[in-house]
Image (cartoon, rainbow over all chains, first blue to last red; front, side, top):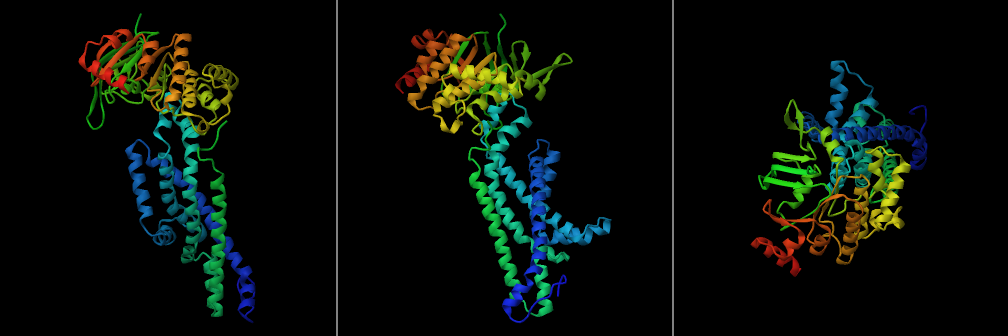
Length: 230
Length: 257
């Protein structure tokens, strides 16, 4: 029994059917961690990208260091650090929030590169034309650069969405009961691992396929020339 | 009459230490239509790009009317210009690029009204009215709601001209406006520029290799070589009786093409 739900061990099929509601509770956490982790990555990544391309070196260099540091150290270490070390300095977050933040931070290092590449890929002539028309920096970004960068950025971001889904099981390392964590408990209590683990695999596959399909749909609908302005 | 553009002992070096302009002096009078010609890499486009504030300068002073472009007067001496000063000065100048550089995510109309609305502070209605007049002048009214990628090169360049004109610059510059076009498009674009020249008493600075066009439109042709003006004068004189050997060579080459 887990979360008050009993399993039926008569055979593999009844077992599988009976643990579905339990796994779905875990899936809720997986989806939560993915959605919020990805949102953090989208926003923080943009902030990193802009700070990194700032003209002042006192801003751009430390940002670059932080991005490299986050990107080149394992997520698991960052996770442990946030969860076990930060409370020593008085910063205690619940496990799920810590996990979401760690995922978001790690992926913001990736997404910042995606943003940067997307912004750089807008031809220089566009910036020059905007300057010749005396458009300000903000206006140039808003109406010229960002609308043209988005179709280049979205496909790459999408890959990271799929990838972040697949990274959520790492949260079980800090006691977050997402899908994999739940299935492990089921396995440990029933001594049957094959059914719950297979089902978790299938559920992950369903999640990633849904995400990838949604993103491909969006991608196909994005005009190549940029978000149109009338 | 005081010149609209003055280059005073201007030196432009790129980061790799190539000197493009060295101690360069140059003036344009209001209403003048000047054509710059010469071999590629001789610094013609750089002159335009400096005036458009796309390239800075290392030494000397550039004036637009009485005001230094790349400097500000502070406590009686000249200090490097702030972005605010550049923004103010840029309003005097417009530019048409070789590769048009239209905004592909905007309709033709939006390309033209974007800056008048957000920079000049025109209302949308005023900006649209201005844009429609210009579209009519360049013969592109029918394409008002089209996106640039659906247009030919010649059509794009006519839109780009309308877009630059919509800002009502005192000086309009053309950087090889026809050299990225298919040959059959060149005539249309040059015709549009000639019409503008005759209808508005706009000061124009044009980099082009089109000699026939230069002859029709320019009051003065400057032959540019190695970052300085080797020879200049009325088009008739430069084209029929150039005195410098390099000019003669260049003209022979261009005519052969």
